[in-house]
Length: 253
Ligand code: FPP
Image (cartoon, rainbow, N blue to C red; front, side, top):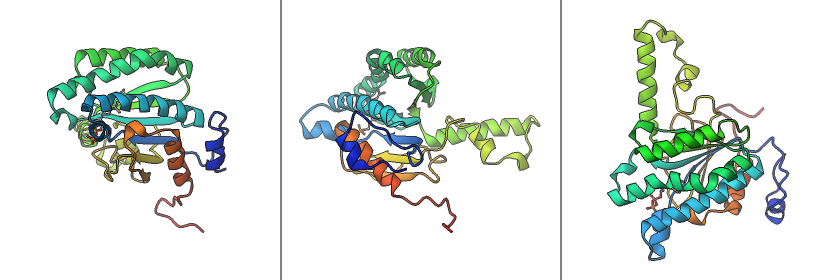
């Protein structure tokens, strides 16, 4: 069953979407914080703060709609190239988000997951993340997966290294390396591939995000800056997704 978009927009608080055509896993590049701030004559950090508020809205909306996994790109392995004060601000955001949202996440049965190079994060960020993982570990609802110090190439390099070690230890033969063997070593192991990839802010690229996992993902782009992104935009993306014809390289008979 498709979600009738207009009906959803009318009854925002009472969504009873059919599950068949709902994307199970949505991945979002939360882009445009800096330009949002610049347009308003504000510092870039104000844009990131507004981006955090947008994230709160979208987590709530995705949970209500019945999305199973929401993956958000919060900090890439390339974002370290930004000026030090901005990096430091971004590294404090998980602490701030979790301090204000952890109770709400638990109330809504949301389970946190993090993917990325945890060792590269400052100690305070790592501590906040570790604590939040433990405190939501028993939840069984939507998975909120934070990509933090994440890069898809780094993820693939790490997977290849682990597979090579298995092979050199005689635990894996070359013929046994298939899609499933690779996926076992990705940060997303155990999660379904994203069905829908959303990138706001007018950019139309993947930016080293989930390169393996998006092989058959439907891509949706919007000009809206992330801090302005709300439930209406999420529903628009889902509506577009529901009108796509996913053939996975096959044909419809
Ligand atoms: C990209 O926009 C955004 C980021 C690198 C940071 C994303 C962070 C948030 C949305 C805040 C929520 C995060 C957490 C961890 C709670 P940009 O700064 O590159 O924007 P621009 O392209 O307009 O400069």
